[in-house]
Image 1 (cartoon, rainbow, N blue to C red):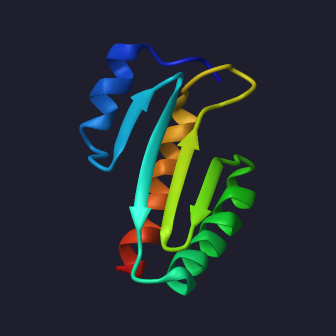
Image 2 (cartoon, one colour):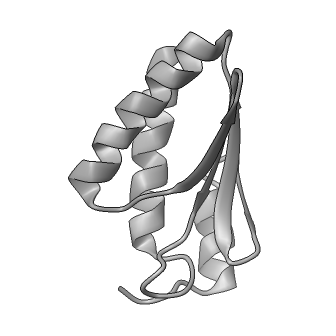
Length: 96
């Protein structure tokens, strides 16, 4: 998987308004009504991550989920990250 250039990443992010590019990864933060809803989304995301064999760096504090995506083998952002971000967006949208 080849690295995307900064220009390509910025163009792709136009379709992902909840995400931003910094420190060699794309990042998003999602806030839910409560811990249960947040954890439910995390569980659904986890199954998608396994299906794609691509795993995020993430943290959860109460009702807030922070996600960072980068392709570790490529040492940066690839199309693999945007594919997972798209799936995450669909999962989070259903939760809302």
